[in-house]
Every structure is written in C-alpha cells, then in structure tokens.
Image 1: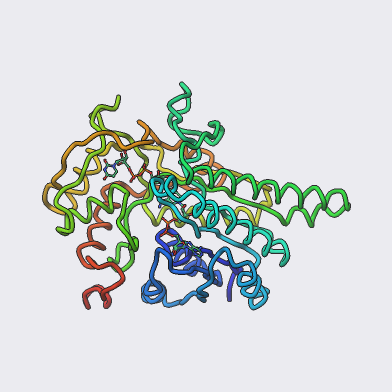
Image 2: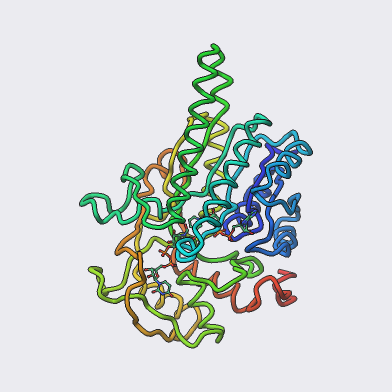
Length: 368
Ligand code: NAD
Ligand code: WQD
C-alpha cells in the first residue's frame, strides 16, 4: 500500500537520495530521474539496504522534455514532484553561466511543462539560502526570515530565483484559470513549496549513505573530511577578519536527515492543505562559525584538523543563519539534530567509505 507517488528529479544526489529514503520509509512510491552527472546509481542499493525498498530509476536528463513526458506516461499515478536536479557550484556558475541557466532554468521549464501536460500539480522545489544574498545589508534580517528581500549575488542564486518565479507564475495561472472557469477545486490542486535550505551536513548514521560528489568538493565539511582521510594536507579557512565571535563566517548547518524530513512534511502539507505557493526556510536557527565547525569535526575524528587561514572567498558573506519559525509553526517541522551529530555521522561515512560509492563499505556495517 502506498500513500502517493512522487517523481524525484536528482534523486540519486546527496539531498535527493536522503529524501527518497524518507519518502520510501513513509510508504510513497518513488520514481527517480537523474542523469548521474554528480551521483552514482550505487546509492539505489544503499537505499534498499537501509529500508528494504527500492525506488524506480530512469537515467533521463532534466532538459529532455520528451524523456520526462515518457516517465509520466509510464507512471500515470504520479501526482507529485520533488525537484532537486541542478548544477550547484557557486564559483563554477560564474564561469559557465549558460550551462547553469540551461540545466537549472531550462531544465525546470521542461519539467513544469511535462507536469502541466500530465496534470501533475504538486511540486516541492530545492531552492537555497543563496537567494537572499547578503542579508546583513538589512539591519533586522539576521536570522533570515522568508520575507527578507531576495538579492542573489551569483549566477547559481539567480537561477534559483528564476525557477521560484516560474513555479509561482504557473501555480498562480492555474489557480486563476480554474476560478474563472468556476472550478476552484481544480485550481486548488496546484501547489508549490519553495524550500530554501541553508548548509546541509552529515550522513546516514549507518555509515553506508552520504555525500559523494563526483568532482572536487567546495563545501566546508566535505573538504574537512578529505583532510581527515589524508586526501588533502590542510583545510583553508577563508577569512578570520569577519565581525563574528571568532572572526570566521557564520552558517546554519542542518543535518541531512532533518533536511530530508523537511521535504516529506512539506509535500504532505501541500497535499493536505492546498496552500498555493509557499516558501519555507529549512535551517536550525543557530549559526556556527568556521572554527566551531572545524573543532566539532576534529572532536568527531579524534584529532585536530590542520588548517591555514587565507583571504576571504569572493562572494562570501558574514552570516547566513535561518529563521526557521515559519516551517516550525506551519509544517510542525524542526531540525533537531546537533552539529556534533552531523560531524559524527559524516566521519562514520567518510572513514568507512573513503572512495564514496565506488567501494563497498565494511561487512559489519552492511550487516548492522
Ligand atoms: P547533488 O549534485 O548531489 O544532486 C543533484 C543531482 O542532480 C545529482 O544527482 C545530479 O546527477 C543530478 N543532475 C544534475 N544535472 C542533471 C540533469 N541535467 N538531468 C538530470 N539530473 C541531473 O546536489 P545536492 O546537494 O543534493 O543538491 C540538490 C538540490 O538542492 C540542488 O537543486 C541544489 O541546488 C539544492 N541545494 C543544495 C544545497 C547544498 O549545499 N548541497 C543547498 C541549497 C540548495
Ligand atoms: C561555509 C563556510 C566559507 C570552504 C554554499 C552555497 C549555498 C548552498 C550551500 C547551494 C563559509 C567557509 C568553506 C573552505 C572555508 N548551496 N569555507 N574553507 O558558501 O555557506 O554555501 O553551499 O545552494 O548556496 O553558497 O557553504 O560550505 O562553501 O562554506 O573557510 O575550504 O565555510 O567561507 O564561510 P556556503 P560552504
């Protein structure tokens, strides 16, 4: 017995794979489309090992509208989409902007068109805290509420704002058309959650599922993990001259299991409450500095992580901490796991899978 069917784009990636796990555990049928640009299909085996269910998987590019239509044709029961598939490297987005607009914006357009032509009317979209840009430009906007004006400072962030607008425009048009046709119930079917996440961290506590980027990582914790397993000599700390308690920049690190669960509760909210378009911040509400993270991860590893302070990274801002009270209140959702848990789970994953999904984890983890 399933409670509903969901198409998950980018479902073999980091956040997508954990959300697929949460959906399967909640008895959703899950169909993934992902072209494995930044992921491995080995994750399907790990998901099955953990929850004894396997998602259906299609190797389809999100920019292939005909391919997406075929997936919807083959699964007419799909009535929801969670849309993760995207390129996500901020620095790279400024170097190859057209690739980012193609995958993130045109890909989303293809998906929305395929959804509209199949009357699939609920979408949960992976947006990002990066849509806010530098919220410290407003005196009372830290921690950042959803009403903070958007102001992305990079190409990647602009693609997210564009897709948020496309989704909002589509849902509004569908709802308006239905009310003009005196069929408000038809319009109420169209709903969207724009989930603006802060900094995802951690791995599955089993040690067999985690983040496995295909290229060079650029996020703080995956880089610290590479230092801990000896793939890098030291971590570079980008600036210790910020106006923070220790001089390093502040971010809101959210455990991947809490983030995945946020998608499940947002989807259920759309299905139960038909709210139209809603944006929710998914974060803990507590900021940690780079030094605090490096220390917490060192504790999890059992030794200090060597680092060197270098200049600020272009485009970085002092503080990106979420005000998650809207999601706490409306979704009944809270990111309860601590940064210590994120670090311990990340280390268990990294220590046991230094080659990510390209190697099998130790037998004892598979049996546990
Ligand atoms: P990820 O790279 O692990 O996952 C993205 C997935 O999309 C990958 O599996 C990749 O293979 C797939 N993909 C890429 N291009 C594709 C295409 N053309 N067709 C089909 N599949 C394609 O990244 P993630 O960290 O899991 O991020 C998931 C989503 O969340 C992205 O939209 C990202 O922008 C957003 N996001 C990520 C973070 C973060 O820090 N990780 C923060 C906020 C928002
Ligand atoms: C965290 C902190 C760095 C690496 C990015 C995107 C954002 C979202 C999450 C997708 C910062 C510092 C980092 C290093 C360091 N992704 N740092 N040395 O920049 O907060 O957010 O990922 O939507 O959009 O911008 O994350 O992990 O790169 O950096 O000192 O080697 O760690 O300066 O203060 P960021 P991050």
